[in-house]
Image 1 (tube, rainbow, N blue to C red):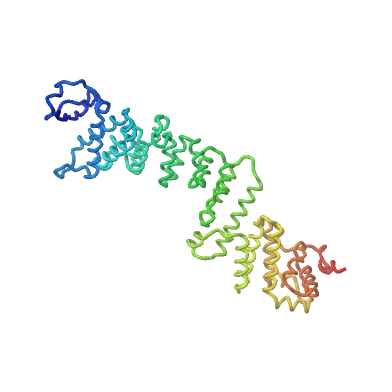
Image 2: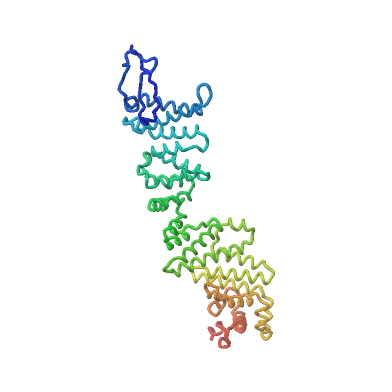
Length: 445
């Protein structure tokens, strides 16, 4: 029976870096020729390819320890790693070709584990040579905060590596963007997107994790309108602080748009007003307010009315009333906004019931001075008129257009409505031409 030949692996020399040859080893059969043609090991000897793979796996299991327990010589590890990479990368047999991605990852991961921490030059070079994109990304990230970060930067590789990843079919740019996204490094992905704007655009549109950051490359490309819309569309409704930040960025981007969209500008300002209102109404610690969910306008108004009813100081009541009216002014639906505004004015009226009862019984005792100084209604109206230019929707300010709605919400008799209307008209008219009968009286005639 013919004995199996034993082969020695010859480490490539500097003169012939890519040539690993098979030579008869000690203990070989006499039937094996003393001289054989020098042929690439990986082309003619699949069994020895498997041997190299098994050696790598054994080193991985033992943490690169020899049988004696000491560390394996780094030179030997590097030699086997290079042999494995050359062998499997140039393999033509289906089995070896299929195993190549696995062997490549195994070899380069092992190499990094046995070299001194931070000395990844060879691993990085081999990852470039054999297009191990995952390895390149990981090494670059591991060194990004070190002095040698520039050595392991991926930026110079964009445009140079034209091969695709054999496992995913991704180009180098596509792989880098996807890998950093999958590892939660969204900023890295967006930053590398400078080199592949179209690939980044496609990824950001389909990947929900990146969608809210679409404004960043839009700003970079000076698409300020798109950046504004992105900030508005993907603002975080679960966190008030993040929501505020998104709106602020939308406002800044919108200022850079050449052709202004007034409707969008108003919408941004209204949303910012709502954030300010929520911060004022919650009144908790800054951290607690920042982490709260964004409240709807209706919820903010109801909160303001609840606080208004329980507040004792007139100054604070007027402030709460103003906040509630600002929220009304920020609502998109004008009809609903006016309904809530009427509710707010009616609630402010009720806060001074005793005064109004006195004045309706003794009409001659009411004066404009006492109205504007002694009632929440009057002081709020005065503040609204003084800051009219700052209120987005002046229709929420009390006037003839909402008088009847306010009176209806008071829930009083028709006769009382007439008396109250007359009193209000007498003290709220802004010029002498608007005097006399109330709307209620006019409707009755």
